[in-house]
Image 1: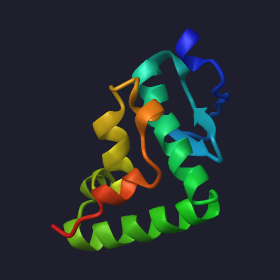
Image 2 (image 1 turned 120 degrees about the horizontal axis):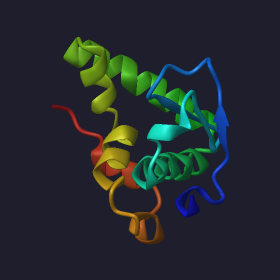
Image 3 (image 1 turned 90 degrees about the horizontal axis):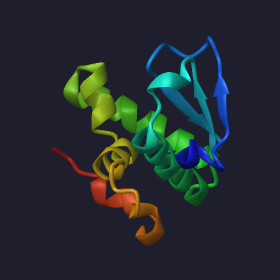
Length: 114
C-alpha cells in the first residue's frame, strides 16, 4: 500500500482490536486490515505533534490533558475526543495535503475550555 510507505507499522496482540497506538513515530496495531490512508494520515499528524514536543513532552501533555478532560466530561471516550492532539488529527485526518502545509504547534488552536 503506497500510503503506508515510510511509516513503520508493527502488529502486536497487546493492542486492542481496531485500535492503534503511535509510540515515538512507530504505529502499533493488532490488525492491519482496517488501516487505510486516512488512519495513516491521522497517525502521521500525531508523529508531527510528537516531534514538536520532543516526544516525551507530547506524552506528558497528552496524559495531563486527558485527565483534565476526563474530569471535565466524566466519560472516557468524550475526554479522548476532546484532547487537542486528537481534535487536530481527527479534523485533518482526511486531508492528505494537510501535513505539507501544517504550521508548527497547530494543535494549540484546539486547546479550549468548553
